[in-house]
Image: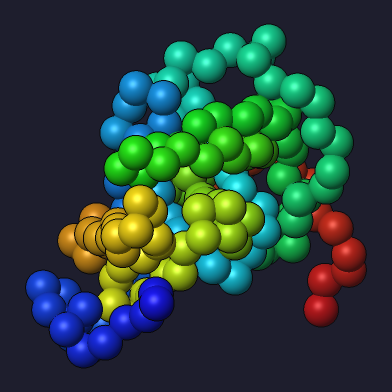
Length: 170
């Protein structure tokens, strides 16, 4: 059974309000600063990872679905790409949208990834657990990295990004 107990808190800084930020393997690369967002369904790759994986525009398929940011702006999508995420010996193919927007994270993995892996996550315990080959496997979050991402997000001074406001202001 997949679950969490107080033992799973050992090695974490408690109490905390940290996001669950992990390192996952995409292709041949260990990718740091990946946010596990269990409340979303949109899997996103940001420009730094897109460039770091040496992806090209011809690697993308079209995706014209609108994406609205927290600020109420429509984010321009560069396209969509399917990439393999490897955890231990397990591989899950994930359809990411590629956006040209700032984020302290390299990517966001969400509910569809967790469901495909058969995983459960706990922000409190800073872990993702899943069953594989009769064993419970763990992906451990990095609280230091999560805190660095939060500071970077707070410190970021937005520039004129290619997006358009939607709706009416208050």
